[in-house]
Image (cartoon, rainbow, N blue to C red):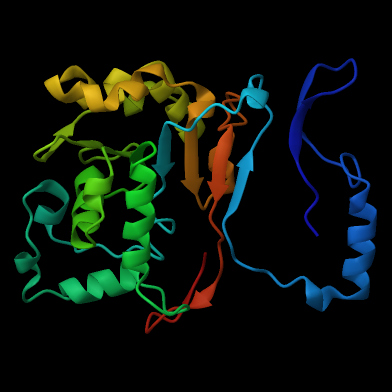
Length: 278
């Protein structure tokens, strides 16, 4: 039974982080715990997405979401497998034909990275449908800790037909290119100010809100019109979709993602890879 954690202004102590307490916010906690002890089999782990809007000043005004940022590894992918070719990480015009004679085929990369063996139907098609719908409402971006860099992430998304739903890809400190952005006609690389912010996703997204032109080069181009909403971001305008709970709040800087979706983590025997953790 997971007790809720929260940040709050507490009595005369001011703002206190990571508070808790069974029954602190809901009297239903007591009955819920009793019911679980009596019939634990009724509370199976569902492994579903958990979405949260935290408390913030203008919450009652229901401000719209303007940007949804997706983690890549174990969020867009189930598990991540990359070709080892140098060209895959460095060339935006990389072609799947370069996989010939290697350990990976295009079909296997799609299968192992994106398709779920746990449900019926194509997960890739479901992701495309989701992203198409979200793209009509707000801008989409990818923020990953991929050591392979932004171009590797881009090329894997291209294989799945998912790349063009996003307007930017950022990878946190990497020896390779850390940024890619999409114009109306093509993708191009750029150097986002990743090294100027603390090494935490909450800090990075705070910097995005405060400096959108540095993270979205499109805003400095003639086609900036379709991205105008990104010029007026606020912390509550951004949703982070991620499988790591620690990415939603930084204990070092107190930066916090106000709206987020937590993707379920699990250990499972995966295809012919054997048991995979998280």
